[in-house]
Length: 223
Image (cartoon, rainbow, N blue to C red; front, side):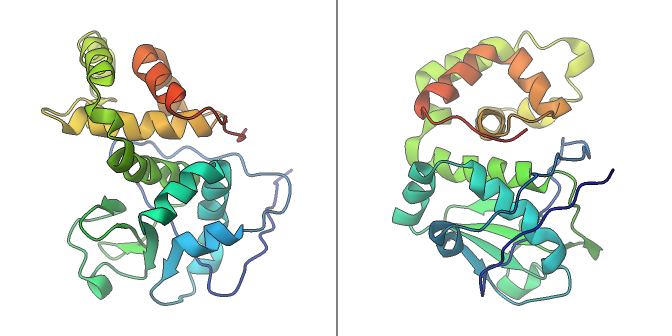
């Protein structure tokens, strides 16, 4: 039987999701109870303009935000970092493609349409957590920590050949690899439901994941 998700939507609170390179389209498990965005969730989300698409995607971003501890969301609020939901990239002059954290503007951009195609919903809650992980990383500098980097580069070097294509987004040269890996391990920490890619990251980057786990003590509640 197909589950349905009821969302209590406050006035002005809208959201949408996107697809991140390296992520397969895996259907999320929907929560089984209504979710009401907290006041802090509403404060973190800014909407450029409503469209017909926003009603269908708000549940995913809302659920992603609900998984994150209030303490982390408060860190984002204090630094005036927001999710900016926009129908198209052009409306806000976004030149970075899909969903992205843009530290210069203190925003996480979530376009409803990318290259003329509607955004994918399959992993929107996880993408929400991933982009929030980038924003959180900009605050705590976790991916730059020597302990994390030592663990990451050691584990990245041991990734089996058959997994390197799957992990190519997380094995980029320079600091891009650690940054992307940190963000997805952040998502893994709070998204405890089944997800093939996050499961594999946790398996192949156990020490890196342990570092991320120890940054905040509040566990996730998905799944």
